[in-house]
Length: 432
Image (tube, rainbow, N blue to C red; front, side):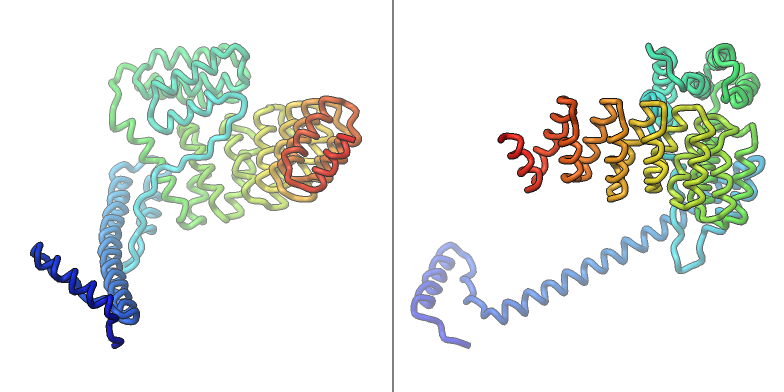
């Protein structure tokens, strides 16, 4: 050990004197660096041991709670067996309970499909309110769709869901009135089959008080459907297919069934999703199927989406297909629609989705669409998409060829936001 210097000794003695005067312990001589390092390492090891022990105790607690939750889920399903799915759901839920020592997962909340906003934010917000059991808010939101100044293409669906929410609130007469409005105002609606099934349910329950057991029954079915996600596809897929074809099952349950099928790797499950994407049911179920079809990113699913796009007239479904093309990175079909679609709004949507795909092929498709496009708003969207892609050379090319002053300014404005030598050189060229 190295001897202390004179100044260090004097400092320590002074500190000792002060400490004694105030009844404190005298300070210890400073530790050597090696001793300090050893002490720090020892402290770190002790802290690590404490954290490991705490983590072990926490993990044991979670395992115990998870096992209890999963067993409760099985008991709940056993107590509420329902036609067509109850018995099989019990067996599948039991299969989910792993054998010790692996802890089972706790029951998942009911699966909720993604909500795309198409022509009316109030419509999708109303469905989200249904998911949250806020039925009074749902009625208010669907009324906004029904009474919108510009008629909504989803007004018939809004009448159905309004009636659904009113029935949940026990307002049977109002629910029947909403269903009558749906049938009277939209005699060709794809919602009529579901509306007739709901009408029979409401009439059967008319005069009865709202039952908490009935309210919870649908949620129990949602939990059972969600439990099928990780189960044996050979057993789950036929079960879900039967649920989809059962007219007594609500569209809300059927949407969850499509969601679960979309998670499966089974070819049969994909075939069912594709079938509903082509239509034949209510529009919401078709939109849900189209939405998930894009997640497969296969050649077959892209071709099927193309067939759906060309076979339907519903603008909402076509928009959903365009967004699924973007999810599946289908530049080829988006580029073709961006150039050939007669509906300007859909061409605009195709351009927007192309702009979301960061790829040289997408940039080339945008430039090609710009040269053949005549709509100024769509050309402006193309310039924005090129700017988002960082396509400096292509923006400069468009700006050089553009004769419309407004569009030329739009291109220059996007170039001015880019930190690029090429962009700065072109801007300097304009000042000459």
